[in-house]
Image (cartoon, rainbow, N blue to C red; front, side, top):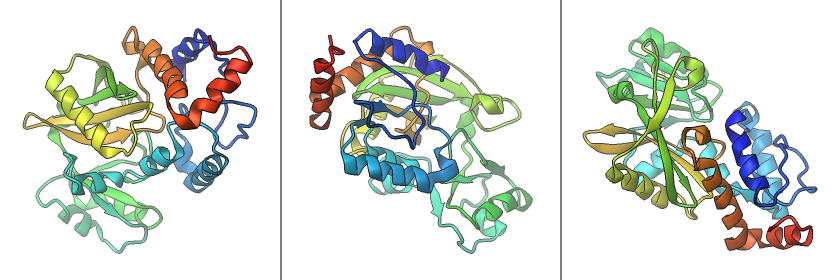
Length: 285
């Protein structure tokens, strides 16, 4: 993706040769892979999961790890995080084939419009804002074949969804994403816009708290998306697979990302072989 080209340059300045490889490929000719532009994985989540299994079995070094990626693919993780006391948007996950009518979907959060969306999806795909039984019918149809999430519509989205970007647990920068006047989704493909954002440090600490308590090991890169509700940050999504991290919105972001990858090679046990291998090829300065 264009936003990641600056990351490739940042890694090149550190002595790494960088090339894009589609997920599902044989990675044996490489020494490290960083998940970036694989947002089509929901289209074949079974094949994607099998590929993750192969990577994990072979101990091939990737960032973020297969364990982290696998756990993050189904947004039902929001239910698990809420059960652990983390502040999230209220979420109900429904299993595929679960017998629920449109009326039942609307009744999960009585008196409120609801957002219905696939549990495994990217870029706001197939998300529906339902304020009537007719609106909810499409969600009921999708539920026949795939897991779904139902959440109350949060009017704070009009003020913007904040994305906090972290590299190796260190806050880098943030952007605010706002939907178009006629929509509720913040992605550019749906008319949304984004701009650099200078968050209150209290919100940064809340985002970091969520991140630290949501994962067993701090990932190389992470994006914490949330809304401010009653002066508190509520998690909307924790993006750990292929999030856009808005490198062009912050002057030093690409360099920070490159340094995080380089540091991960040096400090994480399962990546140390990469450093030795690259030094043998004179790739590491």
